[in-house]
Image (cartoon, rainbow, N blue to C red; front, side, top):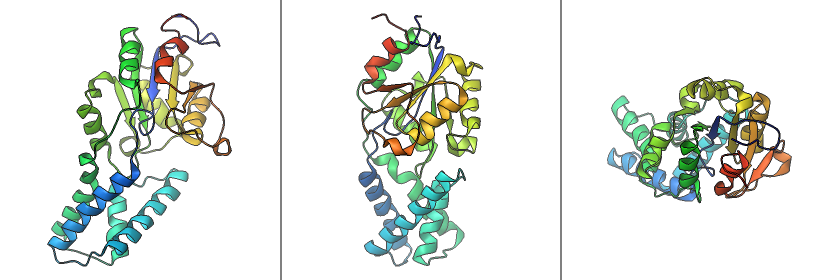
Length: 250
């Protein structure tokens, strides 16, 4: 395997999830979640007007965003509880569970797209002996659903390991989530690993802090320079990864 430009031999690469592996569709996710929650609330005779649910969803997202920035876990389960709180509902335990389950499971029905060329690129990397993982800051859609999305696209089996924040207990750029991934990929040394993601504050800063090759994927979104450090390389097409990592010459 040829060098990457700084004499590194890359044995493993980890991918961010949203807007790196899978295109996010926030409006569609929100719509499906609102419909699912409204149906459950109406089923149990609880007031559930559109504007009130939208305001409750806004409040849940604001709490998630603040917790994410502070590296404090805030899962979809927490968000569903906030929605009920803001709506002023305190249902019986079984009803509460049904509303929370509806909130958590809604996005599994949304049709998503993989980012261009990512599946073929991962297959090429694996054929070349590179181990492949995921490091994902889970938002309001749980990792169980994220795995289902990958499975539906036929790529879940391509990954050797994954580190989802709702399972590991921390968000990027905390080194613990990167270490969890590298350990799961066979104890790969950070100097022989790369991480690719779209966000400077979490993906780039976390990878650089670990001593991994930091790659910023700009094929879907191009993160603002004010948000954090720049990567070692900016990648706009996943098809460029094998050459960049030295898997192919040229």
